[in-house]
Image (cartoon, rainbow, N blue to C red; front, side):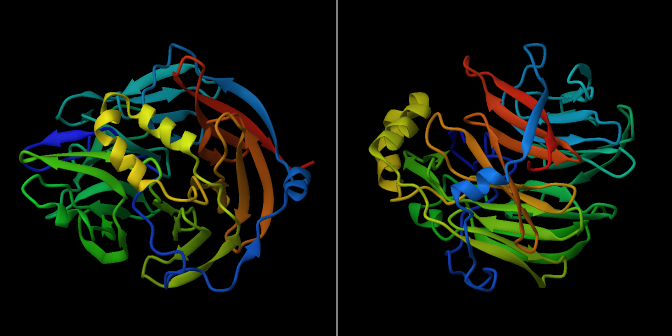
Length: 389
């Protein structure tokens, strides 16, 4: 997350991802799934359960991407891409060809500053969230006509992620208090994110479905200004709304997925036992280099924040069959491995993607992944997913 700098109240220049919505609770927190958990499948078991991925297409230079925050698929197989640096939703054909753009830059109806999430709703209407404008926009199916908008602003916080519960008027939103240069460094600790359930009419259904510490960030305060950047080793909380209308959430310091109903009741989940990889001096050096011009200023903060081990998972996504795809951490230049689990903890299989790939969406038999090519340009790749051999 790039630095932002202000002398009043900070708003984020870029969310860590649409997928990373907060910092972790303790690994043995009270909301962890019950039971001791099962062992992570061994390398041989994962290899024997490998899902076959057949590449269907990859985007080329005609689809300019910067920082993809969300991808969804409609009933015809068209892709809708929410990209932070594009003030319009990019629409691709099922074969990956550019079809059109929805919206444009601005503050009026159907216009955006920074798109931070897209979701195709039943009937193929399109929901788009702009975190900079605190505004949710819903487009009528198949066109650029704005059906309605929802003001997501709230006292004391910004909605950093908004997801619709399928087939309902319910919204699941994650609110976070922005950094304020007028505060002291003591205010940087103990910050919490709150997951709220609202209607599209902005009625509160549940004010605090989940509460957890805000993302671990690197913060520098000087001369009445505050500079913030994401902690490259920071553990995150991830919140997903499943196709069954329940909320799935995970803390990346453990391989555990919790399930919560919209009325706040625990609905199970699962935990896997696994040893996370060590953080090396080379990892720390790469993290500083990745910060670019900010690296020199944040170097000491990065070194101080570096933990002994990496988080146990990178992220996870829910497919439209109610299965969790869990991304395991991998060494630099090594393939990206993803484990697939049913919501009750039954192991389905594993998938292996090129180094640096992140699964963005799995719909039907198609998997959409994001990766960065050899020229450091973001690309989307679509695969057909076949059962394990």
